[in-house]
Amino acid sequence: MIRLMIALALCCPLLTAQQATVSSIFKDPVIGNITKLDVQGRLEVEVKGSDVPERVPLDETEEISFGHKGDERKPEEAPLRVYLVNGDVLHGSPEEGPEDDEEVFVIKGTRFGTLRINIDAVKRIEVVKNVQPNVLPEPEEKKDVTYFASMGDRPAEADPASELVRIVKDGVYLYNEFLDDDNYAGTKFPWSALRGVVCYRSDHTPYTKLLGIFTLRDGSVIRGVVKNWGEGKVTLTHNVLKEDIALEENALISVTMKNGKYLYLSDMEFAGKPEERPYFLPGDFNYDDYLFKVRRDQAQGGGAISIGGKVFAKGLGVHSLSRLTFDLNRGFKRFISVIGLDDTAGELGDVEFKIYADDKLVYESGVLRRSAGAKSIDIDVLNVSKLVLEVTAGGDDDVLDRANWANAKAVR
Image 1 (cartoon, rainbow, N blue to C red):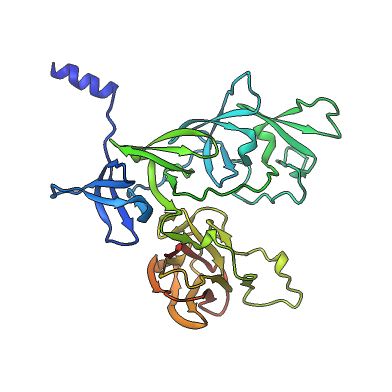
Image 2: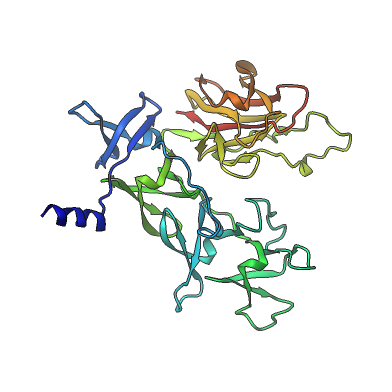
């Protein structure tokens, strides 16, 4: 009997709840196992040594973290990075799609399973071996742009006349109006011939209700409405793919909540043009050509915001010198953020963070280097109309001064 039970356990392993840290804007972090999401929208957390579970409203939750480290990414297992119109990033391998629907392609991830995606939901595709994340420029016109890889004597080049029409396991079909004429099925190109395809898509309407941003250990980021939670897994409803996705807690680094009783600054409009410039200002400086403009929910290197090994789903990635202004209109009580140099900053990077509330200096960090790690700040902004976030060069230059306002939010 015992042998049978062991055999069944090996063949059908049970999901086990992972210990989570649930951070809230109104109470101290709660550490324990999440047992369920109740009908009132509260996470029920079983805390060791207590007979009474803690209950944390999801709309007051900042982040649920599991303490997991990211996976070592292997291009042979996840050869593609796929970006969706809602900001999701999927690391995975293309699979054969349905024969009766050429507009759907299938991607398989090491942590999220298999997803069916309509091609209209795809913002860009990058071939991991051939290009770094987010370096391929956005289309200048309302057309897709294909970026070919160098092959033999042929240099890498861009084709602004190729429209992405189909994605299959071993490549893509592209339609070029000048070369393909009435062959609307397009010409097939293998993945090895591409750096990526950046698609023109009309503006995506952001989801304005309570939303979870799931950061996975494989580097993928998936957004969805939390449907239920318990027994070591969470189910979310994806508002773009229109399907439920079940994720194991063991696959997650964190879940960052959005649209609760706070507003992320990376989702707010700037009050005027950002003031950003290099330390040594050239006489012909043109901000429109500046390479180090503020990035929303990304670090200056183009990847995820990361400080001291911790990855953040939300925030502002800047490069000194930087000054960003936001209108709070006296509608918030606190400003909360985690600050520090990004993990991609070099040893020469050093910056200072400053915060102004209605033109009054209310916070300065002192000079920080990458070795300082992350610092949490919580500033009173009650009755404040204008909030200014400034990053200055800590030394006598701005070499690799990549700074992050991670999870920066205004609390109502």
